[in-house]
Structures are given as C-alpha cells and as structure tokens.
Length: 215
Ligand code: AP5
Image 1 (spheres, protein in one colour):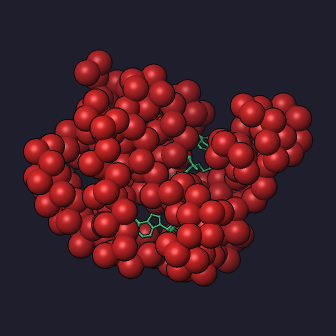
Image 2 (tube, helix red, strand yellow; image 1 turned 135 degrees about the horizontal axis):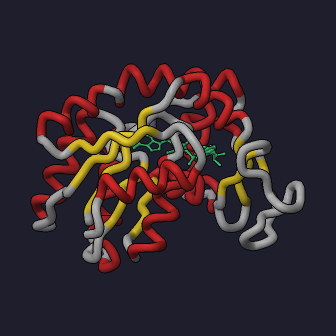
C-alpha cells in the first residue's frame, strides 16, 4: 500500500509508521528523520534545516519536494511506502501528486491521526529519542527499561531540540496554519482514513490495521 500519514506533531505518526512498515515490509519515509540525519551529518541540507527546525517552522517546499521525489524513486518504494510528515502544505500535496503520476504510482490512503492538543503537548515534551537508531520512548507512557538507554540498540536517549514546550506550541500553530487544510484536500479525493490517535500504542495500531484492512 502507498500511504500518507497526516496529523499534528506528536500524534504518534512515527510510532505507528515504524510498527506497520516493519510488519508489512513497506518503506518508511519520514521527512523529519531524513532532516535530522542531514543535520547530524552536517550536509548542506542539514545546515539549512537546523535553525528552521529548532524554531518549529517548515523547511521550504522546493527543498522538501526534491528530497521526497528522489526518495520515492528508490526501488524499495515499489512494494509500498508510508510518507510520514509529508506533505505538510498544499504545494507539497500537489507536487506529490505530480511525482507519483510520473512514477506511475497511486496513493491508496491518507491516514489522518486526530487527537486533543493537550495530549500532544504532553507527548512531545516527554519524548525521548535514541541518538543511534531513532527509536522513540516517552518518560511516562513508554519508558525505556533502563533510564536514558534505548531498549532496541543500547544507544543514548535525548530530548529533541524542537520538543521544548515553547517550540512545541509553535509547531502546533504551524500545523493549524499550513497543514490542517490537507484533511479536507484528501477527504475531497475520497481516500481519507480517520484514526483516533488517543489511547495505548497497541490500541491505536489495532484501529489503524482495522481501517486499512489486510491488504
Ligand atoms: P517531524 O519529525 O515530522 O515532526 P512532527 O510531524 O512534528 O511529528 P513528531 O515526530 O513530533 O510526532 P509524531 O506524530 O511522529 O509522533 P511520535 O510517534 O514521535 O518534523 C520535525 C520538523 O522537521 C518540522 O517541525 C519541520 O521543521 C521539519 N519538517 C519535517 N517534514 C517537513 C515537511 N514535509 N515540510 C517542511 N518541513 C518539514 O510520538 C510522539 C511521542 O508520543 C513519543 O514520545 C512517543 O513515544 C509517544 N507516543 C506515541 N504514541 C503514543 C500513544 N499511543 N500513547 C502514549 N504515547 C505515545
């Protein structure tokens, strides 16, 4: 299946994408993860992205669309993919349609994770991310077995610079201003799947799987 995961920051898109992509052997394309990898590697994209991400603003559309178009052309996307965090603007959504048409691909569903704002703030300000493998934990909801250490690879856990409360609130405003209109955009195309993102990770995963069916 070819999917877009849409929803406010902290809704659990990345957590659910990692789980289902692994189960079904789909490519997980997280633009946030790609940007953080570029920042870590000190590439020109990373150098440009760092200050924008730290403020909770969006990377320019042209840059983001080029990165995603390049990634979608890779062989592993043929089996199915999840675009996690892209598109985030109407321009990105239109460019995505153009890219998919060129690749002779069709988007099956846009999954919209909806959840209350205050839950989002608590999720993001409590998030812990592994420096080595990118796995996510939460200080209270999904704590690691050993404080500060990743269960999956033993890497060091840290708080993302953009997960401080002030930046989190700005990211939520940016989402409302630039991204929320895509819910209607995909609903208008008839392929929007709404998933209630509140509750335990396993409950959300079960709702998602039921909504997508067995394909
Ligand atoms: P990105 O990394 O995409 O951030 P985001 O969309 O803001 O999403 P998050 O990663 O914060 O949340 P999520 O929904 O994936 O939740 P998660 O599963 O991690 O983007 C970062 C920045 O990059 C942007 O601000 C922008 O600057 C730039 N960028 C990226 N894409 C761009 C684009 N297309 N255009 C322009 N700029 C772009 O979960 C959150 C926390 O909650 C974790 O701690 C997790 O463990 C916990 N959790 C998850 N599920 C549950 C649950 N069910 N119960 C309890 N806790 C849970």
